[in-house]
Length: 184
Image (cartoon, rainbow, N blue to C red; front, top):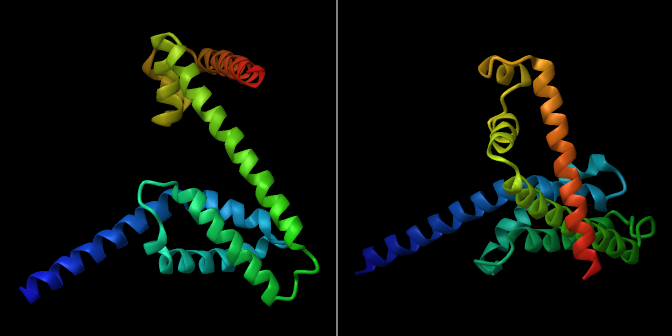
């Protein structure tokens, strides 16, 4: 019985470790960009991000599964940054109020970007099949315009023109959706 319990605890620990690695890997760059926005010198962000990663790992058992890991990680990053700035006696350079204002602005920008992402997905779905296929091949499968031209027996310039028109169409669609959502 004791051996089974020991293996069960080890399995749970391993699953938690794997979950943490997946979450951090998926959210590392957004958290890193957030940290850069909080420190006076971008060069400090690398060391600070390492510290944030360590704190995230230590506090991972406090993270509620099913909630937004990125939002939680940004809160941890904000607190870690505050502590860092205090320990470096730079709190006079960047006040807590300024740090909060930066964090609030970044949250607002994140919400806007997420809204644009949602609208982009909707607008792509509204495209005719051939245009959706071209967008998928170019941006998801990362085929070059030259490769797309060769595969479709088309001129490269035509592919560039098609992509340009589709991007403009998507931008117009997103802009309309944003305007409609702000009118509500």
